[in-house]
Image 1 (cartoon, helix red, strand yellow):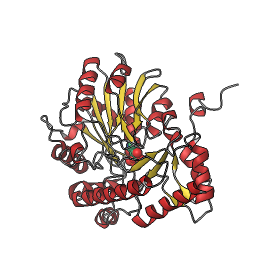
Image 2 (cartoon, protein in one colour):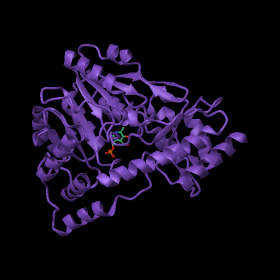
Image 3 (cartoon, rainbow, N blue to C red):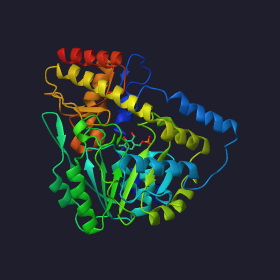
Image 4 (cartoon, rainbow, N blue to C red):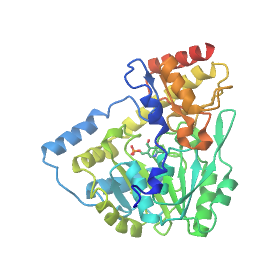
Length: 393
Ligand SMILES: Cc1ncc(COP(=O)(O)O)c(C=O)c1O
């Protein structure tokens, strides 16, 4: 008998976050902090640009790599933000239908079955699932947590990225921990990848969501886009979702070597063919005029982070430190660091509190809970109160 599905697909774990969220279906009283999404609607000037494009009849297929105006604007954005010595040209930019799709396209273009892909974990589950779908060997390199602060042993990562490794994938600032890679570590990693011909893929979804002045360079987190040239095996995957609060629009982009982008058009053709033109028009306005909005988003998230850190820090048994970036607290509760899915379900059932279980982010995350703090002060305070009452019972 032929197999029904590829065993690789059958072996993929279903989302543990969904498993917990499903336990709360039908309950209007749940405070939901389980998904990685803010509570703010996309700014009006961005929505208006999409409406205007629709009214102007922009409803047709367009270039596989995206509207040339948007690609030019994204190249200019990369140059403005990162100021690379060798400027990013439009031929190094491709528009994709979301950040997750950018990452999936990269995997499709680079991975042959059995290739070794090294990933810093715990991490957003899509980053480990996508190479697995391509039949890669995924090698996690775990961050460690001390006094609520997450850090990377760089040597551990370099040792794992052996010669012959195909991809090293780093998401910094990191979902779920907020860990942000230091410039020194990025520099060492780039040198290592150059030495061994390894592709370095940087998931830059949260590159603008960085709070610590010591970790902030010209409004973005440390990275190597400023140093790489067209000769480097380096790819940045990015998204409009977080910086411009555009999660539902499904728009992202890639900065990569010219030869990679030239081939990527084919891969995009056989996936989605192109991103919707009216969505790209919205993205164009976001990237050209959205700087004040990005700054407001970061300021709001910083205040929310501080509020939640102080509220949870006041609860006995919880140790948290302010994460340097992203929009999550990833924490443990003393005496309850066993099965995080069971604990998250119990919090839904008994406290009406919706958090993501740490196990969703890899076995390294087991015992932790992730709380997305992109929410109003009122909701965050109510949530912390519910958690404190639950633990007192
Ligand atoms: C680490 C990380 N990378 C990429 C993405 C992709 O975002 P999107 O597919 O909405 O563009 C997300 C979304 O949550 C994320 O957390």
